[in-house]
Length: 146
Image 1: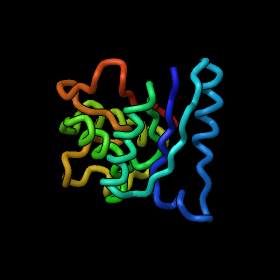
Image 2 (image 1 turned 90 degrees about the vertical axis):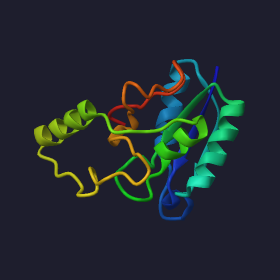
Image 3 (image 1 turned 90 degrees about the horizontal axis):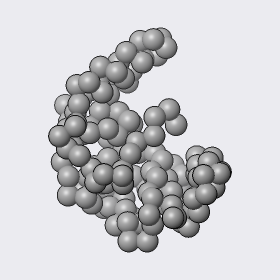
């Protein structure tokens, strides 16, 4: 079984930021006996993320995305994966409530963009989709807390 890590973010393509998440993920995957065959960095461009996702699906058993899952306009990972898989995203009220509760418990302030009306049928944060919009079983999951 092999994995591919896809780090999303135009800032990672500059000399000012490093992709340290993929190092951590590689270590954890190797501990589980999963070989990381590819690491890809892609900027915040929907077409580029879709192209990278299609290529990764053709060569890797496991895809792990890091970045592009936040509330800002350039966070397009969910949309790109949904488009690649031919799925539609929608907000799950239970997930929204859980995220709001988590922020309140920690005393964190949420970005004003977090719950703005979706322009592209966005999921809530963490990349989770409504229960009736299932991704292929055993193929796609969001990592909580990373």
